[in-house]
Image (cartoon, rainbow, N blue to C red):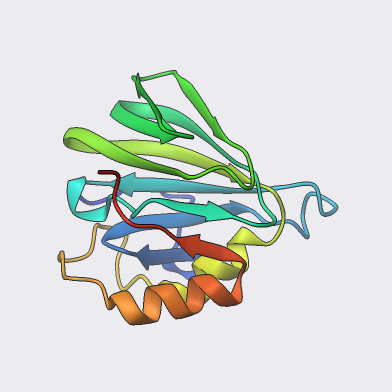
Length: 153
């Protein structure tokens, strides 16, 4: 999948755990209120269960279907739908089908985690899927107040 958007350049794009994320609004641009990332993701990029100490996280599904698990409850959200994961509540999400396109809206701070863990995207396309370095993910997440949790039983 290649993104064809003439207004987007790779200078704001990250490959983050097998997904493509584009920083659309930073906390600095919103007066410290929130940040917005646009994300293209396949099942190879489904994040592990985790919880944030400091940030709330909201998702708008622009295209596709995603199963969101928040606090143990799983809800399938399709195109145009919304999910909210408050800080301190375990959550994750899983793409249903081949891919999904999301807006990820977060309290200030989470963008620093994305920048540290992700890598500059070499192109406006999904990266070649690869196994994440779990120890690095846990380490970087911990520095940002994010606890990686075991998969649900």
